[in-house]
Length: 220
Image (cartoon, rainbow, N blue to C red; front, side):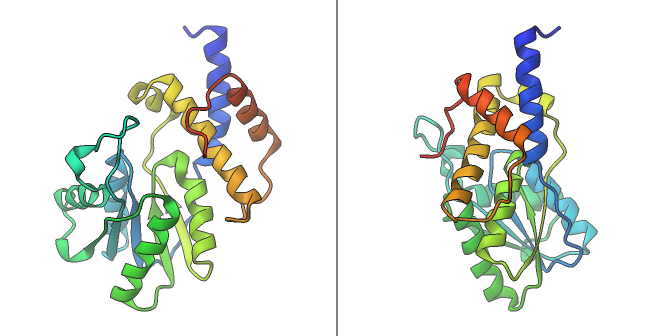
């Protein structure tokens, strides 16, 4: 049984989790962009989208990932290549996959991937994004700002907050959630993208967690 402090933290985190896990449908997309992360289930989700649409170009996007101590993850394998390998294992033919292996942030993911896709496909009317759940809202805002003429959809693999606590420790999860909200606030304020008004209960939950010390992942 959770103690009172843990129950409070879970309640605050749940509010932010539900806000960040944005899902937007795009019924007519020409391509899929898989945004790199450590979670292979994002690639599995991309495979499901690939099958459901009858096959389209998939751009796996992401450079080399580094751990918090600066060491290379996956022996220097790029996120793009790791997801491409996963998709091939799932059954996606190599001819449908392109790789964007240089980006180090979400804006670069979108811009560099779109250049590759436009060179390959020409006109693009819609793109389906796949990402880890708690990063979806910021990714959607970023994509909509970078290419406002595109119909963007975004989705994520189903994973609950409780499952996330099993995979990662409590401090990491809460700090990442706080960091995501902080980025949305900051990037909206400086005009990087339009986020609209953030609900008051989300601001309250974010402030409470920040004040409790979960600030390891704040933007610089």
